[in-house]
Amino acid sequence: MDIPHISDLLLRPSASDQEILNVENEWNAKLPHSYIQLLKISNGILTEQGIVIYGTEDMIERNATWETKVYAQDYIAIGDDSGGRVFLMHQGDEEKRVLIVDSGDMTPEHADLVTSDFTQWVKNGFLIKTDETEDSGSTSLNCKIVLIDMPNGGLKDLLKIKSVFGLKMTAADLLKGSRNLPFIVAEEYPYGLAKKLVEKMVGIKIELRVAK
Image 1: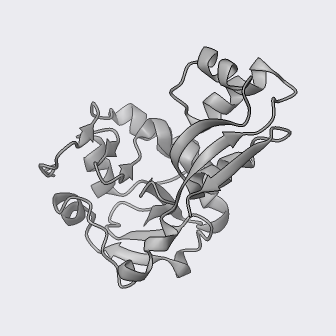
Image 2: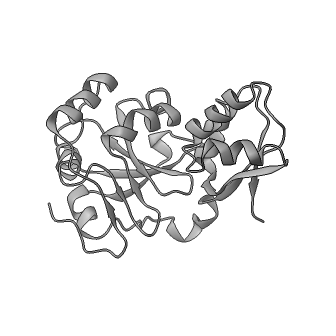
């Protein structure tokens, strides 16, 4: 499989056979062969356009967040568009199709077909083109994540926020910001993902603000 020459394409070291096997065992899933081929070239990919292809380190956490087993049985989320839409592939060696679905409705029956050939999709630079592409721009939302009250757990809860949302700021900066509320902890965060993650923040007052 050839990786296209895309500007600002972020690649990672290749995944080992053991890392891939660990994912399959933990998730009780059979990853498509074409997807495994990509993982062995780069264990996760991020494009300048915001397309994220999950590596083995992110796959379990992301599929748990999207509740794939609940809403898309026999499928696995292999990436997202950083705007609230998720890429799904059916489990199995020979599966090549990639679907895209809104994170708020993970039902495969409501998904659009991105490509019938995963390998060709990679070669084409992960272009998203569906029958509803022109009408779906409004579903790709980003938001600001705003802490509006100091959590009761203090630093412990702040560290939980940092961990769950994958924030790059230091714990010291987060603590400093929490003393001047409301405090924006992240800008341009995928709304669909943020909405899912907020559900884990029991007792912590966080607001999602979408630009109008």
